[in-house]
Image 1 (spheres, each protein chain N blue to C red):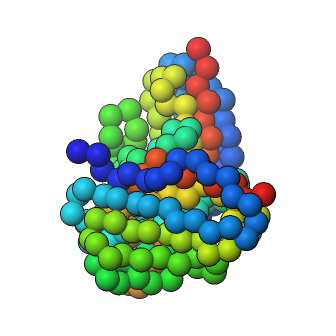
Image 2: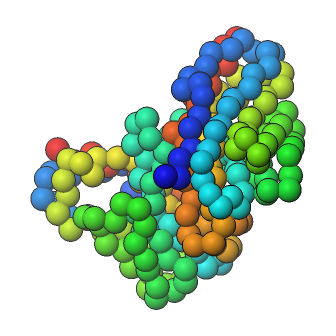
Amino acid sequence: NAGVTQTPKFRVLKTGQSMTLLCAQDMNHEYMYWYRQDPGMGLRLIHYSVGEGTTAKGEVPDGYNVSRLKKQNFLLGLESAAPSQTSVYFCASSYSREGHTEAFFGQGTRLTVV
Amino acid sequence: KNQVEQSPQSLIILEGKNCTLQCNYTVSPFSNLRWYKQDTGRGPVSLTIMTFSENTKSNGRYTATLDADTKQSSLHITASQLSDSASYICVVSAAGGFKTIFGAGTRLFVKA
C-alpha cells in the first residue's frame, strides 16, 4: 500500500518553462489537494478536488492549473514557471473534507525555478 | 483574520527530557485542531485530532491538550527520543466552508 506518491521528487526549471507534477493515491479517497510549503510559513492550499472531474481554487492558485481526470490522480501544472514558485509542493488526499478526516501526504516535490 | 501561531520556532532538548510545544489560534468558527509531525524531507503525518468537546488526546508519548475558551493548544512530548527530531505543525480547521490553516511549525532537535 503506497499511500500518496508524488513524481518527481526534485526538479530545476528555468524561468518560463512549464512542467506537471503528478500525484497518485491508492486509498480510493475522494478529496485531493495540492499545497506549497515555504520557509517560515505554514502549508498553503493551491488547488483542491472533491472528486473525479472537479477542481477548485485554494488560497494561492495564481500561476497553477490542475486536473483530476481519474479519481486516483491529481495533476498540478505550471504553465510558465517563475522564481516565486520555488517551493516544496505537497499533495494530499483524504476520505472526506479537508480537516474533518485525516489527510495523507506525499513525500513532497522540491522545485527550484532559476 | 484566521491565524495559527506556534511557539517556539525551534527547540533543542536532550534525549530523555520532556518538552511542550504551544499553538494559539484565532480560527473561527472552530471545528477541530490537529497536530502533525513532519520529518525532514517527508510529508506531514497526523499525530492527534481534537474537536471542540475534547480537551486532551494521547498518541503514545505525545499528548495534545486543547482549551477552546482561550484558543490554545499544546503538544507535550514525554521521554524524548532522537527520532522525535522533526517539525511539529498545528493545524486548525473552521466549521463550514473549506478552511484549514496550517501553523508554521516548531522545529524540535533532540540531542544525545
